[in-house]
Image (tube, rainbow, N blue to C red; front, side):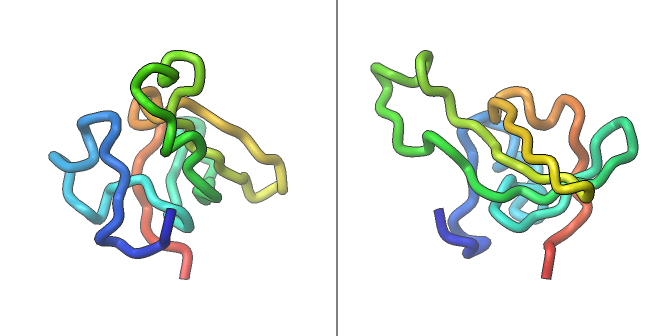
Length: 88
């Protein structure tokens, strides 16, 4: 996936309604409900076809300030993450 703001993720049905600034894209910065900041590294499985989406859900891969890398299904992303801004 490119970092172009015109190419934003909308598999969860929330990104479009919130607007482009809060879409989940690589290099965007998000704050977890625990207060930690995270940078989206990549969106995984974005090309999974309909027949395999249950087995390979679209997933956000993100990194913390401490260097740890995490992943979470996109459908669960907005439950505990709030958009902060772009990373550069």
